Length: 230
Length: 230
DNA sequence: GTCTATATTTTGATAGAC
DNA sequence: GTCTATCAAAATATAGAC
Image 1 (cartoon, helix red, strand yellow):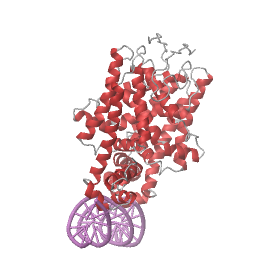
Image 2: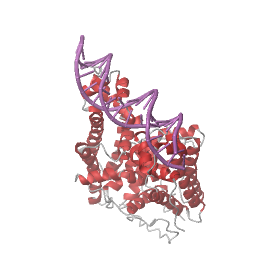
Image 3: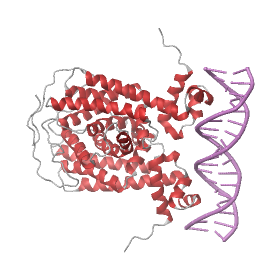
Image 4: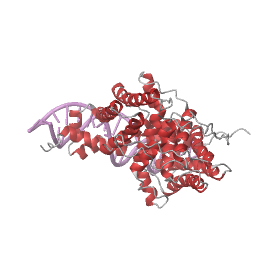
């Protein structure tokens, strides 16, 4: 059967997600959302617990989707390396399905996570927990070195998310003929990110690495590379 | 001589940077800035070209500082690997000196770079240009594989910047006892990031890497590592 | 469920005294 | 250079008709 025409509630959710992503929570007016949904302000207060309630519901939907997706990956019958790669792809695929997600995530972080309640935080923690399970499995299998899950999380997810969020800025740089960065290939970029993280998690690699401290001039670089990995 | 007491103009700049970082451009009122600077609204319009003019001046100062710092690194007498590592440290050090910088950068990206003018974009392009020079030198020296400068830029800078920007969210996760991520070591994290990117730029490594496409199951992983690097 | 109308507050910006 | 006073516009939220 064809999808039923969206009811007013889901029309509001879709409109709000788009407008919050582009303008942010504070610069979005309830009227903007209503107009975009083809409804009026009062309908938003009828269906949701105010502007913030609507906002939180959107964020929770997204976090739940990411949690489900990454949970399935952690449970799958794959080698740890492949689970980790799939974890990254999971974010990228989810961002394809919900283009507003990267913007909403980044905005909420920049806002100091001010609006997140316990439920939403729990959903976010579950995503991190799924990654931690993958990493743990890799360590026990002897293919990953021990690493802080959140550090791995950020070094994977931040580039993927910021690739989307910088799209308008890259457009501007290209338009002004300052740097031709608008047309970069998304999948090649994601592959680049996976490559880097997998390399640095390699069980044979040194932990913080010989790269060492800030501004360390040239401290003899001993190429400690035992060849590692089975 | 001790620094002279800051004049009203620089008091406004400092106050505005802090308030913009925490609340964003749109949710910051000119009154907020004035109050924090210990002055009043009219002084802002006396010294600057409105709210947006003030904002752009702050962003340009920061981009100029980053451009100068990374330019000096690109020109320094270091091996390409060390220049690249210093480039990352440069961002981290600049973020130490100006804690508002990561928040302002991320917010402006999420806002679609809406408020950036040609001058500011040029300053941003210069930073990317400095990285491109480092990469190019590494390729010519045979120690880096060829890579898209912006891809390298994002995979280095996004994690470093988001490490700062997620600080409040990490506090909340820790406070709610959902994940103990508040106290992660900053320098260890930066080292982790450098490690990953350097590993993936290694001249001996395969380009997009066998990690390959989304959901690609297990395609035989050939550990192509010729040992490379002089 | 859907709408119009409106109360209340706050905003960016300026005029003009000192 | 620094201030007070104020305007015009826009915001969130609700009351109440249909």
